[in-house]
Length: 229
Ligand code: OAD
Image (cartoon, rainbow, N blue to C red; front, side, top):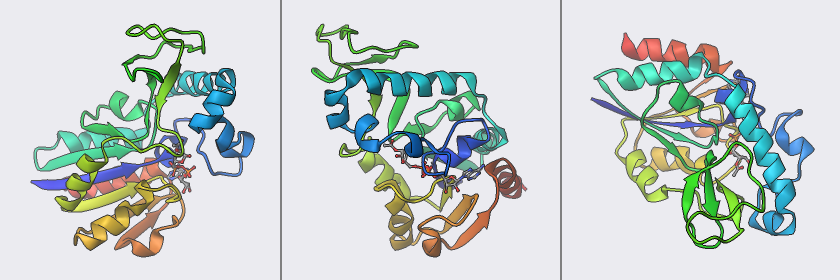
């Protein structure tokens, strides 16, 4: 049984029509991170932050999984592989592509979180600052997204899986945001082989044992076919 930890980023969903963050037409060209992806930005202008994530949620809902998402689900279904997908993505395309073992380290567009009591519930299609928490009643509803300055979810579990893995694969991520950008170094120090599948060399390219560059919809199914023999 080969244990594979797969880190995914915005690049795996790009061919489903979801915009990445750091491309020249990426989301961070149009929006300041400080305004829409920090707790301070939310306190400053909750309406703007909700509008930003409502638009992201609508785009994710309209998108369909592409051959890269579907190939990863096929790998997971193979009895010879134990696959954990650690995704930085807040869309649900891995799940809709058929993957079951998916860990959303940066949260999800489809969850709501009470800023006041930390209760979580499924997000409505459109969220607003006047929504009340179903548990404590506070009007402090935010998307269940990890913002800059906040700790990503389930880090202990991820590090544990990384150290126990037979292979670490990074797909569609620029390698700019920690702690995810550090997983290749963590794997390397644990003696775990590493593979990058990305449109272009990422910031961490030199640390990977092997790197293949091209669109995820081609590279990922190709790699999965090799694994499944
Ligand atoms: P980025 O936008 O930083 O990087 C996307 C990467 O995907 C780039 O290296 C692209 O070259 C690559 N890419 C684009 N299209 C591709 C394709 N069709 N096939 C394969 N690769 C492709 O996105 P992330 O690395 O995911 O965090 O960004 C990490 C985090 O930064 C995000 O989770 C988000 C953001 O700020 C938060 O909001 C907390």
